[in-house]
Structure formats: C-alpha cells, structure tokens
Length: 428
Image 1 (cartoon, rainbow, N blue to C red):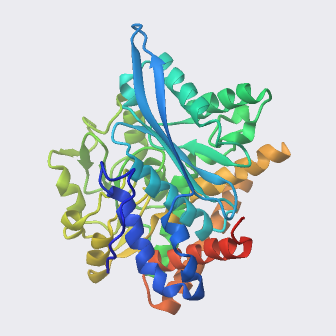
Image 2: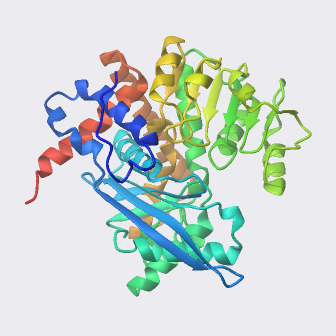
Image 3: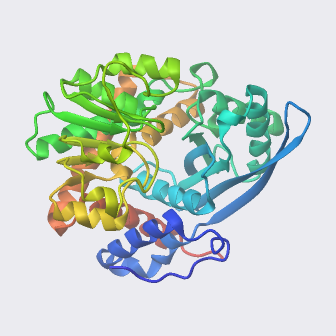
C-alpha cells in the first residue's frame, strides 16, 4: 500500500529518501488509529527544521563550511530527544526520518520525550582533533536557539561520542552562563553521564532478542548470530549474545566482512577493531570480499546495526535468518518488510529493538536534574524491565490486531502521540 505525498520544497532537490520510508510506515498504520486518524498529518510534518551553516577555520588557515541540521519532529509528549551524527552522507531527508522514528520510539517504550535528530554532512576522519572540536562547538552555537534541557536534548549517534557531547554541553553552558548538564545525554561520567549508557543500546537489542527467541522457541545457547555494524550497538550486542552462549558467525563493518563457522572470538575482535579501526585483516576468521554475501549468512538471528535502508528488495530475498533485530534506525525498507514477512522472518523493529539507548538517556537526564546517581546494576535492571514490558505490550497488540511487530509498535506509539496532540489542542 502506498500513498502519494507532496514532497516538501526543501526536499525536492535531494529526493524524498528515508523520509519516504517513514511516510509509508505511517500510511500503513493509519487504518488502525480510529478517530485519532484525523490528527495523523501531525506525524507527517516535522514541527521544526533548522538548517545551519557551520564554518570553521582549518588548521592550515583556510575556512571550511559544513551543512548542519537539527529537526524537531514532535514535542507533544515532552522535549525533543535524539542523537547527532557526523557523516559524509547525512541529508535532510535522513535527519527528518530519524527524528520521526525517535518520536515513535520514545512513545513506543513510553518515555516522556518527543522526537528530534541532528547531523552534519562531514567525514569526521578528515578533521584533526582541533578541527572536530571547533566544528562541534560552532554547530552547537548555531542550534543553541532550539536546544535545552527542557526543549531538545541531543545525544551521540553515528561518529559522535562522549567527547562530542562534552563539547556540546560546555558550549551550551558557556552561552547560558551556567552549567547545564542536562542539555545532552551520553556524556562522560565525570560530567553527569550515566553508568550503563554506553552499552545501553546494544544491551537493549540483546534483551528484546532473548524475548523474541522465546516466542520463536529458539534457544540462545548455540544460536547463530550475524551482525552488521560493530560499534557501540552491534559490538556490544554481539558480545552479550556470545556471553549467553550464542555463536557470532559473521560480522560486517564499513570496510570488510569476517566469518567463522564455529563462531568468532568477539572480545578479541573488539580489541582488534579498537586498535585497527575495522574488522579488515582480523586473523580469527575468514575475510569475505563480496559484501553482498553477508546477507546470505546461514544464521538464526541477524542484527543490522549500521545505517538505514540496508535491507532492501535486493538483500531481503537472500536473508536466511529466523529473527531480525533492528539495532540501526530504519535499516529495513517497507518493500523488504513485505518480502521478509512472506518468508516468515520475525522482525523486531528498530523503535523497540534499539530503544535501550534513549531509555538510559532518559535515566541520565533524570539523574542530572536530581543530582542523584544510580548504580550500574540499578540502571540495567530498570532498562531490562522497560524493554521487556515494551516488547510484551507490542507482541500482544500484534497478536490482537494480527499485524507485524512494526505495525503494532507504530499503532501504540502513534496512539500515544496523537492522544497527547488531541488533548493539548491547537493554540491559538
């Protein structure tokens, strides 16, 4: 099912891209919204889009300009929340879609946030540490007018980390004239960060993966796992599955693919990647030249934890997994969704599977406001409870409505967002 949408003028020069996938997902859920469907255009229109020029002085004295974005999709249920990515392929369509998926994700796990996202079109590997800091601080200054602890709270994403968040927090605080630790999450522990935040997204993938395995009658011990993306999400999920007795038989990153039928040594692979920047050349497995072969890996659980639109009509036909856990945002196109559903593959959608990060970001934000910090065990117990409850609720709704887990998650999330929109009304 597909409905033609008017392409906003600010997207017309770049094409509709990932935003089109999101719009199709909303179209698929609209028939289940009942009277709330009258408000559904709320979900299709970002509340606020800020496009900024980010000029910096390079180390050689030249001036470079980068294009940055911050999109606030919806704030009906609370302040905007979502990461900032630094990547050479960042587009407005991508950031719009990511902000919208954050709205859905936060509502699906019932965290009191709206959805937002940010990014700069840049390959950070081409910048020196000084240039990276200057770019981060200039970007923060440019979006300063719309972010804040009660307005919009950025966090790490692709190619951003604790250090980037520290610079963002410091820049915002200097402009405010006082320390505002709650303006970002994913900060260093020494600046008000939360224990367990770095591992939270990967841990959440593992938790819901275990729940999905139970539903499918799959024993995690001995299960074969393939992971695309080996950073904070894919790498941590792989380690947790390995510690639970699963065999991680294939890992693909931005450079290469390594496989091992008997299972890769995940800890050794993580240490190798930390030292070398990629899985390429790892001696504990066989390196595969053809990247497309990764999708045909004989596995029980597939974890796409890289970028969006990786599972499409071309790759979906070759997938042999029983369960897909979406560690990345928007990794599966709607057309691929249909193909995998017809093949009987259980997809745990991103808005549930990778919600562990924003859940612990919420914990961090709460701790910053109270200046009272929890132990890592408390963090992980609370995270596990919320993830399990969210998965169970979505599973039950999917069974009741006879729809996929993705559609069920969107029904639940859109209902919560649109109920808030309706109750708040329109002003003026």
